[in-house]
Image (cartoon, rainbow, N blue to C red):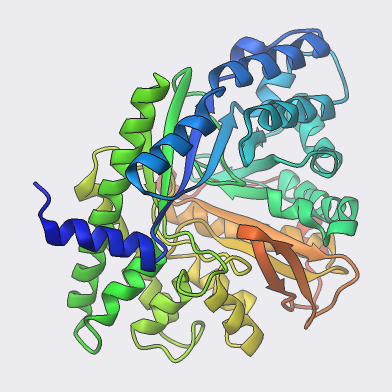
Length: 452
């Protein structure tokens, strides 16, 4: 039973500490939409998405109003589109993205994910067609998000796909030049991508998932920051215990919303993703949590250790609160979406190399980082390869979402607005990685992948 103190504490978390449900995401299988005729396939895609997700937004708004819990986004994820479009006799996959976008607009959701391909061991013809269509697809749609998985612990890293994605990211930035390269904010490159991730831009509905499912993503950096203020100067085991208890309470709220949404939409409940996903708002920052542990500024020595503690404690608290914790679940460190990270990057304390080190111990990876517009495609590919190697060797999900800023150099800023925020353009190493990327082929899986 909840007592009055716990109820009042939860109200304070919502009203003053930025606690919210970041997203309710409905995953939808589109495998039944495969058709040799691309027009019929697109019609089937639109019809199925709008039929299944017809009440998603309204249900989210009803729960938000009745429970008094903010639900920031309502989203849809679908089967990786390369698998669906591959059945159609066409060389142009952009209409599939347009069908997704039109369905998302009809349903009233904030984003739709799944314009995706899984190429960790090799590319089919369909995979390559989809990947090469990404720049045009993201330029011509508003709500579509795209992801490509280029590596895994079991398969190794597909360096041909890594090389291609460097060029695709550059082309996507150029195709959306009039919007500061906004298309790249909707494109993520993964290693060890998970099938039940409710967070964009990497959400897709895995082939091992049910026909449809409800996944919920919870967020609460401000709540954790506030809780740590009460244990200032105390040992790290006290810090860890405080984060665990706070994560437990946050997850219980997410479980409540997920189960209620599942019941009202007559859709199976999948997972609660307990990720500390920051926003540009003051008081909703992962960087400020790390600084509350005693760092003068995020990025200085000790930052990686602080983030490791935070990520682990969040997961431990979450799994005690729900048997259905999944997705990514941990701490996100997107530069543009975290006001503390932005401040540290502008101060020069937080650089690309330090962010890469931090990704060894956090959820996901190099996220929402603006780099100069003239950064070579091979350099972007090399950054992807580095990050994929961290994920492959450590058996964890890692990702890269870089934002080449057209026409801008170090010291400039790109503005995306809303949850995407703004990002200072950060330097990359000027030395070339072109000969490394030109080798192609596949980096083999590590020895510990052989667990059978």
